[in-house]
Length: 272
Image 1 (cartoon, one colour):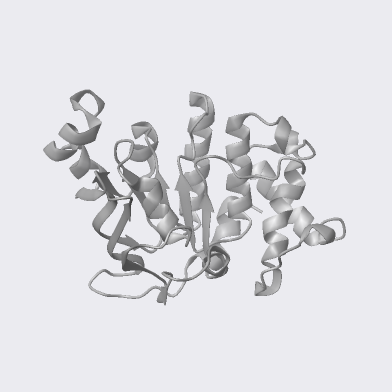
Image 2: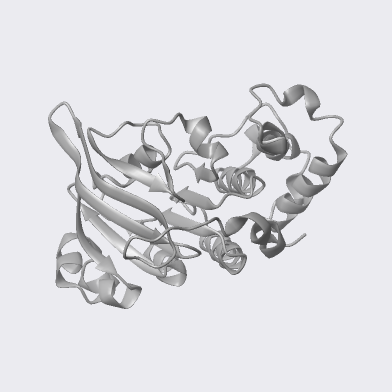
């Protein structure tokens, strides 16, 4: 099973419209403060079905906070997140995950004592038959079909030689590949990726870019936070730029490259 085949069946979603054709994610006037510090202010953002939407900005711009709001880890002070017609604000992270939203974290969150194969099987077992299971571990040994699917996903993300390795033995870059596999096997409608190439050497980064391009062919909608502009401009259909918790620019990669506010706040003349 290719990555394209894996993502095609469940990636489309219903979609909904409100001035944006095929809009699948709508972030509406989101605000969030921590001890008086405005982490997010007046954030309005739409993500279209099937696109790769990059969110960039300097450290402390509010990028990860925004993803945490989307997946229910942080409750906004004001505003709402709507995905595929469902309001996510107020839902728990596992309820949001059941609706078809998966996230790959900035710091890999894997089960260090389990093998690579077992790590990838856990989220698939947790969501089997559409019912969230709090303890899928006992079912790992007897699940042949999910095991086979997990092995194929592991090969697709470049971990073929680590199928039975304990996750704690992996490099940081391979842990990121593992968490990506854990996201992909869920067949999400929306995949949120926080710094997916952090800690990778350039050849590993390029391999991840190729993999994410394959996922795009499968129709999966992705939101990516990334500091590496090579990654951003290789993958993004549209880009949103945050600075100080506010959106300062949105547009195509070419528009962002040529935006003077972006150059001043983040990219720098030498990077665009």
